[in-house]
Image (cartoon, rainbow, N blue to C red; front, side):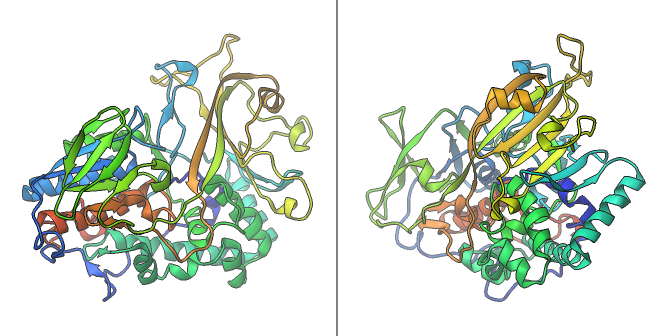
Length: 537
């Protein structure tokens, strides 16, 4: 569910630039998000006394679900109590920070969800509403190189107008105008479609397949990125080098594996930014605003009910007792959550097994201004690009595969007051983040950075869902009163889309169980160009 900094790879192409708000139209076979169009399933047959809702997971999906419920309480006085469970000791899920040298006075570093972009209207709005400071991801002086395991197939970027124009000329000469312009058009079309999900006439969807069909995404998600771009006459080298550099960095998958919708999401990178101090603060603030009760370090082991007229009961591993709820929202990967679900409706709606890309994240500080030129078959005096992306294309032809997916010099290590950190030798250090399929040893790091490695942190993540071409998606409603936020992940996996998925589920849940909704009117509480459904009604 992550945008992990492909801006430098896409900046010169302006892949998401200039996207305008599309006409506010709603396909006729999708419900408009409006109140008082209630399902009769839950209220006509029985009445459950509890007014509590349980949310399992305190990441982007779970925290935003609590926030949307809080919005309905604020607006309409909905009588609902929210309790959020998470087995981790922190809020944010895969959006979390680490502290270099375990020194709290130093600026933290994002370990998981690193950046979000301007088209991510919910996160962008949260930053404004909560008064956070945004840190731009891009550094105009950085050079980007795409490494294939043997050589840099292309480098571009750098400071100065000459470097910028030279980089553009390189890409045009190597890949051709059609490859760049066609990809740009496809990504712009995707961005415009995404914006309809925030419009006053935003669409409520009962299932992910329905949404994909009505947004014309099903034909994109049913092909690999490589096959889809090949069918559009795009230069295959562009797809398997430049586009693949983005998909490998953002989703840990190659273009002949990942479906085209996620491939295009990898390239939609207008104004990539992160919150100063950590993106997790958005999700903490969601929960604070919701006034939910939050139980961290608490693992849910079972969700059950005895009959259709009974409430749901949630049991945790640290208690013999179960708590009663009118509805339960699961905002964590279904199979990884390992929760026993028992209901008279068993078998509940089937959730296809979802694989995740298992990656190793290595974050370190180094006093080496650049990585080792010799490793990259460059002369000792030639600096290595600050951002090294990778392509698998040489390996397809029998060459060596890159040993990592991406290697990025993020920033100079500083104290929170802005002062540069100096190590014991009086030298500044830079923060570097490396994604790889296999662990990187201390010896490997020492060779890569000339023995000048300071602090090192390693983390293994099931970072992103594996996204092969598909037309099958999990249900968002597993049973009456039991909902699944992460059903959206196989279609698009980002922090932002989790907040969209949770908004949709909360709206459905409020209608089915509380005779209410997230928005009762479509009045404009903000200028049309600034309107964000859920925030403004």
